Image (cartoon, rainbow, N blue to C red; front, side, top):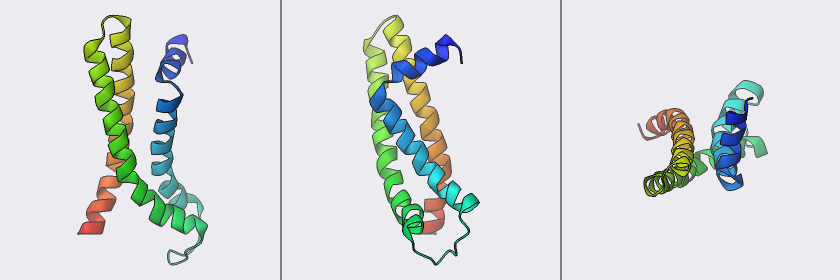
Length: 115
């Protein structure tokens, strides 16, 4: 990892990193359930409730919060100049990339659920 990458992670800040981590964990929980857990689909233990009920409920909420954070980073980038503008532009790109991953994972699930 070079200094530019390290500077990007430092410029994100603790709260943005925590939000991005929550969103990515929300995507990885069902994937881990499919890959690692060998329980039957009808079984409702803690892991089944976590991946089958809580993760789908939290997905739209986290997506809205992440979208709001992206909009705020774009507003801050529009108001800033120079290095601060570049910082908020990088932050917005990272948030947008995580949003694309989240939507690519959860939209087919909700389309299947509704259809």
